[in-house]
Amino acid sequence: MHVIIHIYMQIDNRQEKLSRLRTALLELLERLRQILAVALARTPLVKGNVYEIVRRCGNPNCRCTRGRLHRNMVLTWSEQGRHRMHSIPPARLADLRRKSKDYLRFRRARADVSVLHKKILKVLDQIQELRREAP
Image (tube, rainbow, N blue to C red; front, top):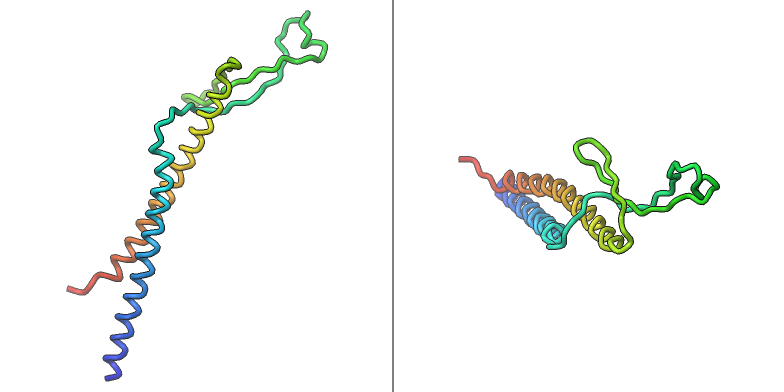
């Protein structure tokens, strides 16, 4: 009788662990759904960062040689191992800022999916171990 109670307690403990793992899996899948919402958006993306540069132009008669430096908004990005820079006209500044931020958000979401994928697989492996019976 003592053996029967012990076996029943093991089964109950296994069911409790399975329940917790199923709940954890559902929470991970909900988090994945939230992350994928960023990836599934239809807005265009622009790779790079938008910021202001202050520089001298090199013309010896220019105002920048007397301390009034030139200010430009630029988009910078890397391509094939090289850094690129593109001057941004004022009319496109807000649009490129938004698209650049959306690109960064997409890249973060992509990295989060990778981490979440590993966690989901770990939970699935634990569920499989608890559900598996000897042949």
